[in-house]
Length: 569
Image (cartoon, rainbow, N blue to C red):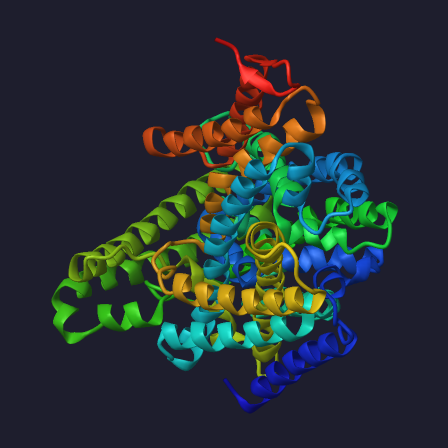
């Protein structure tokens, strides 16, 4: 990190935070602190929703995911536009008219307090765990750049996030998100421009696209129907739609964003904007990862991107075992580089025979390089007993080693700012559910507005401490963007199912809803433990089980003489 990078990083973050706190002043009641007095315009909600999703995980892990597996991860979002339209018609007007603070408060109006408490607890578990992973992502950044231990970086970032969230409230978060999206856009454009401009002079942008495509890094759409394949068109459209319905329709961190809207129409516009903008945004981020891959075709990448693991591999004690692997890796890199050059020449010459031959040679060279990388990771695993996964370090290594002074600070400002936005929104949502659905509903039913405001701030501090602890265990989880979505899929199917029952099945009663959620969660975890079904399908499976169970249990009940429902003998 050079002086210019520190100036850009600190200046951008200071401006974002201070501007958000200034715009968020006056949050002196529970309604203003948690829902901004329901005064937010659609564009502010839309950008806040997008920024809440775009945590550091998005930039650190999604680009790395594209580097190692291509752009097919974008299919994960194909169902999102459909989900946004459905939620604009259903959830937005229902929640607004119910005049609730949380989505789960509505469940008591529709069913009973037991169902509300169950789903609130599921949200707190799921989002609390995800918050820790979100917090760990910037720790990766500081660990790579400054060499700090990861526990120190999570503690520092967690402390900053807790302070900002506790003081600001949801209004400050929303205005901070607006500035963050501007910085984010500038940083992403700069990263892509550098990845292309740093290529050798004889390699054009079209050549780079050719090389990325030949390596399978532009495989944005795959049509095969495979239940065990995480990312294909069908899992994205169907499983992705169910996940998006659950995330935006039942997760308080998102529901709370559009509950701040001044009207139903404004909240609908915020979701529809995301329906249009989210897929292109993810495509753009994944494309950056593909261009970073091409850059490393001509500039030799480290055999392991995680610096500390690379140093361990190069230690004297491992030299005898590592030397032959290193030689194979170097030879494979030179082979791939030469094959890429011949492939470009074949495309320019329009010779289909040479093109096919070049494709085969390039593919062979890539497999050799991948095998050498796996061999290096295998040596580390044998020596340390832990599986090595450096996906989250790929983009950061490129940024910190090759971007010019100032731009490194800008990209890091994007990552830090995105994390602050995501953590702030998630802490605020967790605090809202903790106070509104648990504390005020079950523990302290009659207290002043000032008391609940203080309780909300105290809950924010609690969840921040919890996140720091969970973040400590996120290091070895692999691709963080996958981990976050897999974790959500364990719970979102059950949450979505109970809201489908509430919205679409007026005959379903409280007992059916409650046992439906329990059955749905049981089937989801059974699917994870006993099958290899891709995680996106958990959302579909869980939702269907909840709905079917809820209908079945409700139909087995009959009205008693006093008007209550009893199970039929």
